[in-house]
Image (cartoon, rainbow, N blue to C red; front, top):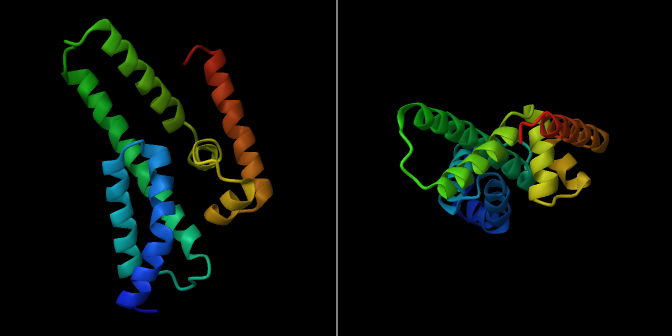
Length: 163
C-alpha cells in the first residue's frame, strides 16, 4: 500500500489522534512532547503505513508508546548530564521535588522494556488487559505476566530503599 489519500489520512487522524496523544502523555506528562510524538507517529504513518490497517489504532498507539519511551531515555540522559555539570542553586524544597521526580522516572525507566510498557498502559493510561494485549500484539496472559513481573521488580526496588 502506498501513501494514504488525504481524505483517508484525515479520517484516521481524526479518529485516532486523541488516543495517540493520551498514550504518549501518560508516559511523558508533557503536552509539548506528546504533540511532537503525535506528529512523528502520523508522519511515519503517512510515509510508511502498515500493510494491514485493521488494527490501525493499536499500531499508532504502539508507535506512540515506543517514541515516548525514546523521549524518556533521552530525558534520563539529559538529567544525568545536568547532574554532572550543573551546580545546585535552588532551595532545599526544589531539590527534594526534583529528586523525587528523578527517582520516579528512574524506577520506571529501569524496568525491562516489556514490563514498562504493560505497567504504564495499565496503571497510567488505565487500559484494560484486553486493550493492552491488542495494542502490543501479545496474548492477554503475556500482559498479565508482564504486569506481574513489573510489579515484582518495583516492589523489590522499593524494599531495597531505591525509592
